[in-house]
Length: 246
Picture 1: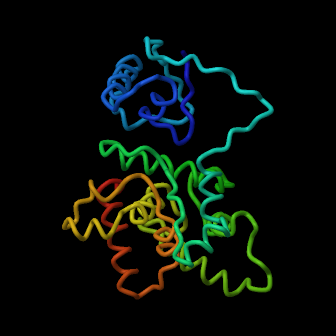
Picture 2: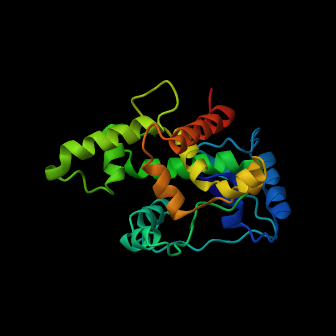
């Protein structure tokens, strides 16, 4: 079957969505078969818009055409609902449980690329000029869930969003936030820091591809200069340097 790679796709999830695999090993076997079939040298590097062939093995699922009148809700939309939910916010500040947001199924071998793919999908939702990144206006639009800044509080919130925009910047281009920079922020919100500290920095046992609501909201609004802020910045920059820096 001919398949057009969409933004946010990776071979692992393409296999999960199109093949009836029951284990990570089966998924990886099909990933390798697709890579061989399409002469893909690096299974972690595929490009949106490219066409690949999905071999119709015994595990292939013949997908049914979607009703054109029904628009499937994307992960980016679901993420927006989760982050902007007043119910979630009220529960979090009252110490009540909020379900974690599942970005993707954890696979340590592809964690950084999966995280970057999810980040790119979310960036694309508010990327108005099509450059695959956020400028300050697009970032502000995202931060306000598309509502924009209330004129009554414009000056105060412009200062806040400019500070947040600066904090998310890691590379030398300070004019935009790209998927790798946003992924590095999400990584720190994904880590179970209690377990990370107890295991002397064992990242593998401290990430699960899910976001804790309180973690996400806290790290989104840390005050510059505090120890937690500095620790958070260090972890973001280290993750970015290890996986995404050119």
